[in-house]
Image (cartoon, rainbow, N blue to C red):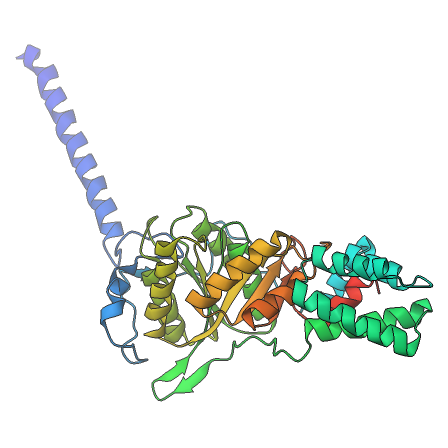
Length: 399
């Protein structure tokens, strides 16, 4: 009997441990059960299943454009996002470009002024002027027009002193850049019988021009003007693109609609972004797209699909083509093809500050018949500015 006592004690301890453990599990379950719901999903993610067949359906209305919470989770901040920033005011940004160009001694303006200030202009001097314009990517046609106009005015007016030469050259360059273009961005929402429709801006271009960065900086421009913005990360092929765009948006409190996997249908993401903009009553939806070479037919066709899908939900207000100002004539080839496929309404020139190729402004406008609307001034978050012909020319001429 005494030998059985330790066995009974052991069994009793096991029963007690079992009861304690079961109670703890029950307590944990009871604590989690009330209103637990599904586990939280990553912020800023949209799974575009609802939009995969957007080509087949009619355009949405404010009454029906309600996103399924299982297929769209959009938040303005990432878990590690910094405090929301207030972007720099837009006014005066291009003044910084003028100052930077002046400090760097813009090669284009300096060379033109140097030749025109000579006592007697020979044919060789005029040839040098034209060559300078061509090297600056002004283009043969515009360069010839400028030289002929300068020849006539120098001969008729007898301009020789430095200040008069500079004033004359400024007048001719401003005319060449064309201040008559409407360079405003169409970012005002419209009101229809179905409710408010946001302005939709599609951003396109080849790889490496800085499209995603430009979209992020443009969001800051709009936030600085007190516009509400939704970002669409339709570059689903570059793994870091959506993360990069979401980070830009988080810094200014702007939500980003993105795919839940790499390689998802970019048209579906664009569609969901525009629909989200309608649901939230946003002023502007900015849609980033993957970089694509202008000679790749399949990629360009995909861009056409993105356009068609977006317009089922809201009309496109702007199609901005991002070009690297240092690419010269290759940039013109890109502009030509994108203009035909995407219906470009405006140009964004990046890496414009300090370049000798400022003439690309003239050339690309002549090629597409659409204006340069924005210029990249540098690598800072607020280094994107509305383009102004007079400020730009003053920067080229160093004052």
